[in-house]
Image 1 (tube, one colour):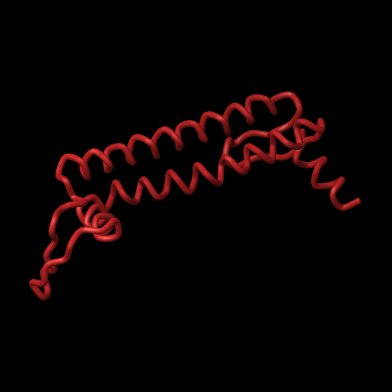
Image 2 (spheres, helix red, strand yellow):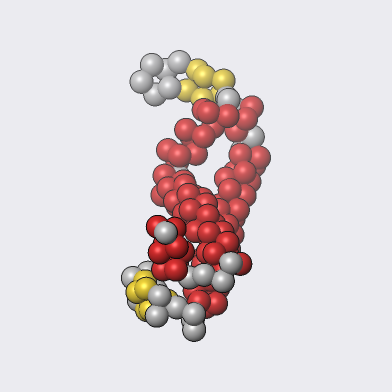
Length: 123
């Protein structure tokens, strides 16, 4: 027994450490896959509607604005707010999980568990 992990609701130790690493790798892969799919959906909408060459109008002033990457990003976030939120969450969580997986692969390469790494760090 190394420690109890609330994320997987189980004790993590040398007997099931490989399954924990697999759990992390699968979640990194799912976050990467979701990020790529949603980004491709946004890219497809940009290309289909030719948003980079479009003219946008400000509703409050009636002023026309030529398209830039920032204007198109604001348009997509306003039009698809929930999807943009999922894209942001999946990309950030995928990045954090990838770092966490990298750390665990690093300590596994030295034959340590999280608890051992933490205790040896203090020595």
